[in-house]
Image (cartoon, rainbow, N blue to C red; front, side, top):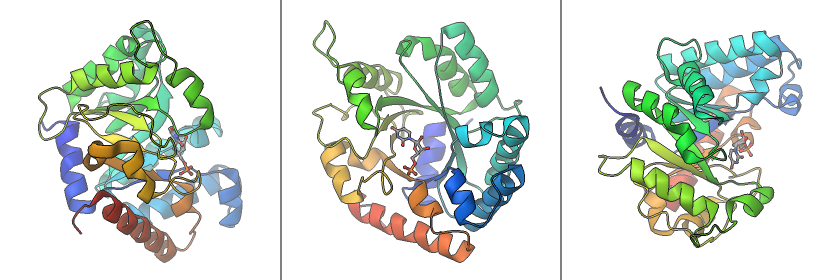
Length: 279
Ligand SMILES: O=c1ccn([C@@H]2O[C@H](COP(=O)(O)O)[C@@H](O)[C@H]2O)c(=O)[nH]1
């Protein structure tokens, strides 16, 4: 079975270093001329998937925007995930789960077990009950070729007070997370399956990302003010492992599929240039 790291490595080589988020904000539904209900949600998602699902390496639905419509919204999430798979995109569900280990095991079944209706290639996870509490996600991901992206240095300004707090061993909370994930990826080729979330907005933080050997998801580009040119300051030598992620910057170009594709091509070209990736 091919690991998530290997599948991601191949997808990025084929389609380029880009993740596009599906974040159906109420304001975007309105701007697209859609109703702020399940029918509008469904039309929004089908439009995005049909426009860019066959050309982006990773697509990241944001669970919150589906959950706000209850069971029917989650139904749309399920069908969106299935359609993305049919279009050949890797699916990363941004759901930021974390809990005590026995509950994390249930989250792992929900998202990383291929028999689940919400099965995706990878999820985001929160480490604030301890990275070790996420062990059931790591083991389920490893068993089924999935991936987990753990929050390290988030793009929002409030994150720093927790993530950059210094522990008794002199390391920040974020560096502890980085080091534990690096350990999980040790020896993996061509890339580990366990990633980190590091916002494109955080600037130079002095954290050592050089040994992660896994993907570094960089949200915060575009709408939150992060720029591809700024990625070098954030990631330094780890730049080749960065997976830049945009949501509103691309989605705001809709609803015309040609405009969504043009926005995707534009940000991809910017990211390739910033990462020094080949066309
Ligand atoms: O540190 C983080 C972690 C996750 N996100 C999520 O990414 C998108 C960003 O959307 P934009 O429209 O491109 O700002 C959104 O789903 C966040 O929940 C993040 O922004 N920062």
